[in-house]
Amino acid sequence: GDSVTQMEGPVTLSEEACLTINCTYTATGYPSLFWYVQYPGEGLQLLLKATKADDKGSNKGFEATYRKETTSFHLEKGSVQVSDSAVYFCALSDTGFQKLVFGTGTRLLVSP
Amino acid sequence: AAGVIQSPRHLIKEKRETATLKCYPIPRHDTVYWYQQGPGQDPQFLISFYEKMQSDKGSIPDRFSAQQFSDYHSELNMSSLELGDSALYFCASSFSGTSYNEQFFGPGTRLTVL
Image (cartoon, rainbow over all chains, first blue to last red; front, side, top):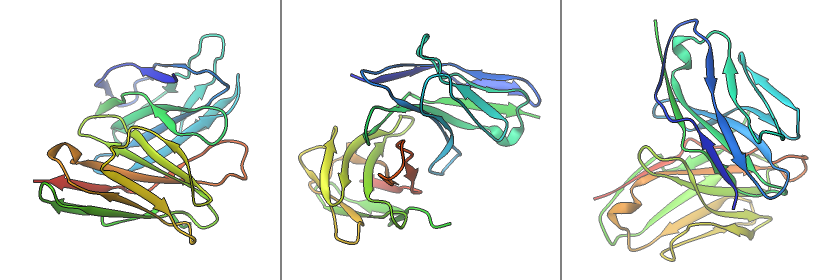
């Protein structure tokens, strides 16, 4: 079945450091890929998305490129802020309007 | 902009009791999904509805049932509650008229079973 694997956390960075959170997926069809962010005590917010190979999703300085050849969708940011501290989930939705399959989440901690 | 509404936000129940969680999707959204997130876990899909019909089913216990009503709101009914049912329950909605499945999540209902 479909699955998502993302790097374990926590990832601890200093403010203005570069961020990469790895995400790889397995899917039978042509999935759409997403990154969701969850701040402490809150729900899931869509951070960015990509719906086909080579698409780049971007939002709030975060970027991720849909790489079909490596089945990856790594999340990157050039300069993190303390306010970016949260749990980041990589997710996929296979063809059609199907359920989201999430990775296990990566906690990011950014210190001043 | 209107968001997904879930009620109640917090719910405390005893073992073997029943609980009903409600979800009001974004206006015009015709698909509703339910997810369960245990402590420190990733969200797990439970069940989904499209145009009031069940469209997919995941790891939902037989003790749970759900439906989507004519106004598109959905309810998750949970009976014979167990300690392990304590979790954050999210509802998400999407609109089938787009070319991709962007799901918008509600704030969640935190269920505690004592």
